[in-house]
Amino acid sequence: MASSVLSSPTVYRSVRALVVALLSGALVAGFLGQIPQLDILEQSARNLYFHVPMWFALMMGTVISAYHSFRYLQSGDRLRDIRAREAAWLALLFGLLGIVTGMVWARFTWYVGSGKWWNFDPKQSMAAVLLLIYGGYFVLRDSVEDPDTRGRVAAVYNLFAVVTMPFLLYILPRQLPSLHPGGEGSPAFTQTDLAPAMRWVFYPSVLGFLGLFWVLYTQRVRLSWIRKRLRREPEL
Amino acid sequence: MTLHPLPASAAAPSLRPQQARPDTAAAYDSTWTEESPAQSPQGLERVMLDDGKIYVVLAVVLIIWIGVVTMLFRTDRRIDALERRLDQDIPEDPA
Image 1 (cartoon, rainbow over the protein chains, first blue to last red):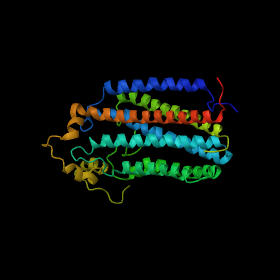
Image 2 (cartoon, one colour; image 1 turned 90 degrees about the vertical axis):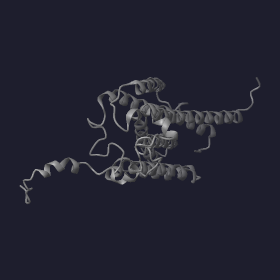
Image 3 (cartoon, rainbow over the protein chains, first blue to last red; image 1 turned 60 degrees about the horizontal axis):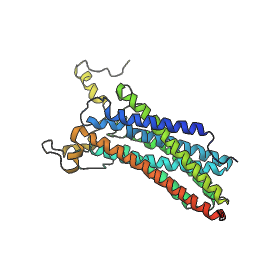
Image 4 (cartoon, each protein chain N blue to C red; image 1 turned 180 degrees about the horizontal axis):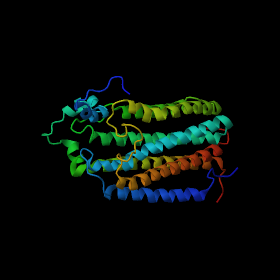
């Protein structure tokens, strides 16, 4: 067996370089670029470049995690279980970042003058529920001793968890009155929702954060795989 | 073909725009009515609302930065653990 789970170091290094370039560009253009002048939002509209990609990364993470859980159930390959766990862990991290950045943003736009950090907006509440579901994945993992049983139980839970993701992030919040944008009608990014000038920063930023997710995920999978091999007896 | 044709009054079309918009603000009216525009922002808001709320963006970027640094530290801790394990597993090499 190869000593690294990395199938192509060249691809990994290229993505890493691309991530650095894209995120550096997104930071510079995000702060200095032109944006439409809107009431309430004002300059905080620039948060679009940083807050929204967190949720894109979470979505990618949950889908990657569910895919590997599915493959784990098929094959019983321990590496699949490691991949599912690390993807879910990073999805949870990006979700936490997304919800905290969203709280800060909402505090000074939606809830300005009220002193409120949290007012149970459906979009926020549902996102919090999703994070709790993924938190439950790790609680479940840690509560099972036998690695094979743990892998299987966690994989099945994970497949159920990913099904709730689109409902909790999109479908349910759109049925309820919410202050969060993108709730009216179909896709969040219609022609009127995102100014053309902002697209040139937003899309590279999303790409950059998705790449960052993948780089961090790959690092963690590599480390977990080394740890598993050092222990020799099947653990993790 | 409509079973109940609309009355020909001009009022109906003018209502359309309001009807089309979902009532997204009603649930938060308490939040908004508490706000008195005459009151100058206090404490944290005085900082965050300055210069067109650009400090909100700064705060968000810093939070994400802290998240990335947290990952960096956790990865380091994992490497430490692996190094300790290597020291245990591999017999001492007389240098």
